[in-house]
Image (cartoon, rainbow, N blue to C red; front, side):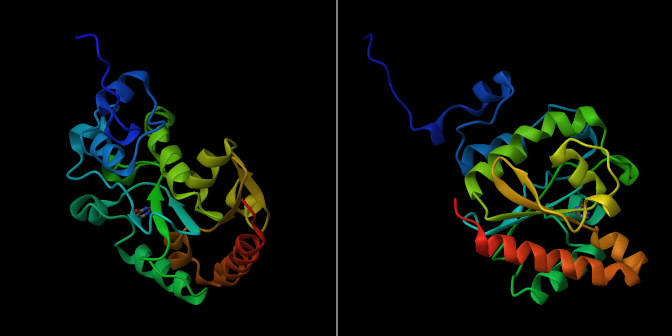
Length: 209
Ligand code: URA
C-alpha cells in the first residue's frame, strides 16, 4: 500500500548489514545473531562455536584478546582456559571481575592449531568488535597481547614497546599489556603487567566521555 514499515535499528535484518560489510547500527541481539551465523571467512568451516564475548554490556572496562583457543571454541566463551584463569586473577587484583567487564577477541572463531589470525580474517571480523566497542562505550580498553594491540592500533610494534603507554581508539583510552598466556610462560613479567593495569585504572577514572 506504499506504506514504509520502519523497524528500530535493533531489528533490522542482519543480512543487510552482512552484505554492506558493516555491523554499524546493530543492537546486541542482531549483532550476536550475525556473529553466530557468520561465514565471512574460512574459519566458519572449522569452528565448533563462535565466541561472541561475555560480560557487562555497560562495562567500564573492555578487555580485547586475540582469538578463541580449543577450550573457548568448545564452550563458546572467551578466556576459559589456563590463560583465562590468570586473566580472572588479574581482574580481581584491580577490583574487577569477569561479569563486570566485557571480554572479547579480535577473532570470533578459532584459527586451526591456534595459528595467528590472518590479516584477512581480522579484517572480516573487525566490524563485530567495532560495534561491540560502540555499544559498550567503555572507559578503558585493555588490549592483551601482540595480536590484539597490533590489530586495534594498526601497527606492528612489539608489545614490549607498546605497553606502559596511553593510546586512544575512537576517543577511548587504550592500554596494551602482555597476554596472560605469555605471563604463564614468563611470570617475571607480571610486575610490568601490574603497572599496566594500574595505568589503565587511572585512565578509566579520569575518562570523561
Ligand atoms: N586467548 C585469547 O586471546 N583469547 C581467548 O579467548 C582465549 C585465549
